[in-house]
Image (cartoon, rainbow, N blue to C red; front, side, top):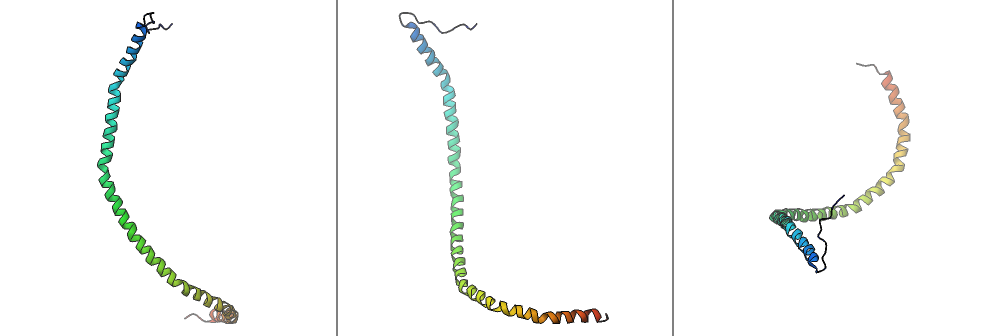
Length: 125
């Protein structure tokens, strides 16, 4: 069976003072751990701050490349927009040619059959 190590309160309040001093002792004993934790946090922050100039330089180089790409994309968009009327005209021209192409296929079909006959009959040299 577990025994209670906590002092019992006496009628004059001395027990309560002892309980308070036990809490203070525990707080004092944990103080080094808290301080070491805070120091470790400060060290982590210091290491992070040392890297910031390098990160800033890297971000500047990325920004410069993005600005360059923005200009290039703007030029490409302009070129594509200039092609748009030509593409519409090309589409209309192809649409006009399609019926003629079908007529040409029908007209060429007998010639393909005749050409196949000649290829089969022609002697090989």
